[in-house]
Length: 338
Image (cartoon, rainbow, N blue to C red; front, side, top):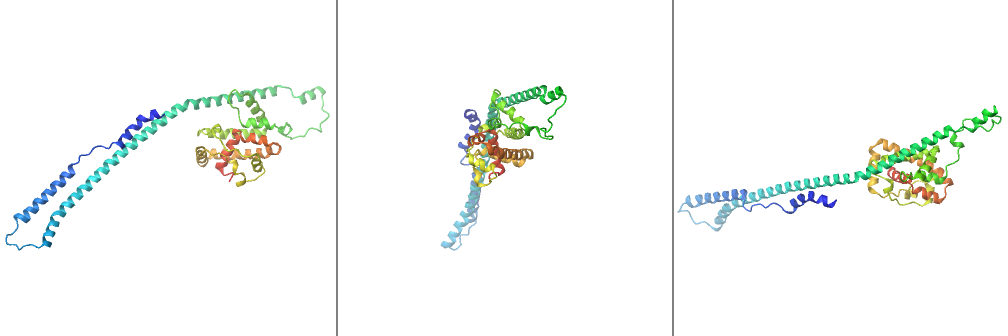
């Protein structure tokens, strides 16, 4: 990268280091010299040719006054010449600086374009992996739902065979299906919140499929996927962040409702570039702001329920997931930990 940018920066550097040579005696000095000669000729004509021989002898004060009268106009002429010369030098320097700035700007643009062309294949490859992983997840979920619908339901089969169901007292009408399902294991939830590492991460996709069957976990995962997608548009990826990890008891305090300085360690993101880009996006993009606040609410609700049954090891593992890093980043920008 340095080698490619040096040719573009060379004209600007040479323009600054080697100023153009200027003639010592130029048009301004010639004009000043001509005016001075004309003035001396006028003085000679007045005091020598036009003088009277019978004039009384002048004193020292008169002689000094005449010398000043002769020299002062010449001094004014050369002071004006020097001022004009300085103005010309400043104008030349200003033009040279503008040329140098234009050269550096062109070098920066060329460097940025070359860096973008180099980074584009890796970004495209990463986007292709994400798209392939998304398609694989959708296919797996479609297969799961299809096979579940194709299997006969035991309740219906028993009713058809027996003709009548006698024990109706165990059925609670209006009970949501997710309340009857078994709770999602904490390990599977943590693995799902970290999202699959690659398109071949079968364990990650399995955990993600299980988590999407749980209504509350699915809400958090979908909200996290939305903000991660929006953050990636600004080149912010959770794998690039290296936050200061908070202790499990701080996560527990936050889950139990503690706010302020006591839980400030949760905002352990120190990447200034990511913080600045996220803060600017939060202020300027209402869609991103709504998605971020929605995600923060979902994660807060999930954490409050997760903390009750989770061990310190589970909470530490949760804090290392991509979803938790997004929560730490957005929470710090939104002032959640202030």
